[in-house]
Image 1 (cartoon, one colour):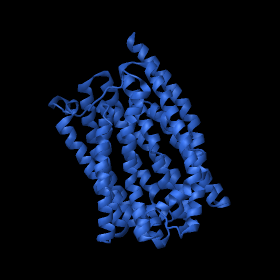
Image 2: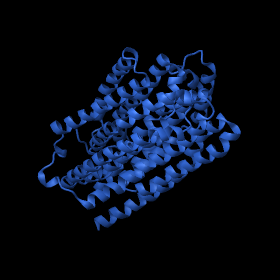
Image 3: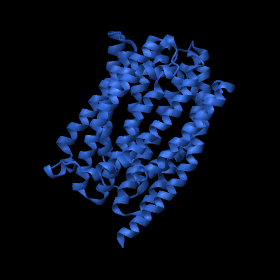
Image 4: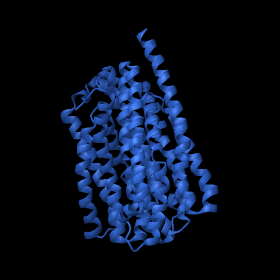
Length: 449
């Protein structure tokens, strides 16, 4: 159900909006965790390494898809806050056309480049074939990723964070069943895990589509809303491309680190894979809070309420930092225990390495509360072009460590990569968020005068 965030207590609205997002993100991460757990336990550590050897490449491509879809939701949230519904519908129509074209282009390109990508990533020969099978199927499922993320992003932009969550719950349960069927019964190996993930996400996207058609009248389009608008396409790309590229630029830094880590051997590939799965799961609340604040900021900018924008961002940062500090302590003391979800207890060398990696980023985990919230708020206010620099700074930090620290310090260099990237990007993200809020205040004042 569509919901305005332009009145009421900001912290309460952000918290209530973020809860379904949080649980939705957790279920989405369950796709990856279930894949890794079943692959690691049933097929062994080499298969786990094969699934994890391309995780940063997946984030490069799928992160771009997720980011650009989130960007397409920004003008929708602003028009919803301003109650400009005809403009909102035309933005949705043009965004859908761009998303469809993007899906065809990315699927063909990534499928062709898949072998070259794995070679560039220094994927060990022992796991290359399984890694290729897994990654190719994930790439062929890009249209499913785009379908869900675009429609879910539009629903969230109009204040409905619950519906996408409900559909993800269903598809996550389906993913468990399909994982077991494809891997254990059909014995399709790593390819089976990828097929289960892609199928489940595609179904969640179709459910969003059917729901919008049947229930969400504010998104139902008349003939006058279904026309190409060069101006609105450019606005959508202006919002979406920087957000998508930000994810991809961040992923390039992760790819450099993962490529360096792949060169350290399968023990560290498995350890890094397990640590990454846990990190991605633990980061879900940050993403939920940041997305809620971004939607809140966008709607209130559309409604011309500058004071609410500032209050919402401050509340969101506070929520993120408190969660990050608490989760960081848990990761620091129980990281090795969590790795047993993916790694057999006999694999002591892998468990120790994974615990080392988790503990290192756990110390600095609270910084993500600042980084994610300020960056997403800046994007929600329409300054995606400034926020993209965060990704470039993270890339720079990870590149330096990949080139200089890993050859000298080995796996310790890998462990230092995320904290270094977060520190550098957080300083910049805070500064541009303050700037974006001040610029929006000026725009609102001009609008009123």
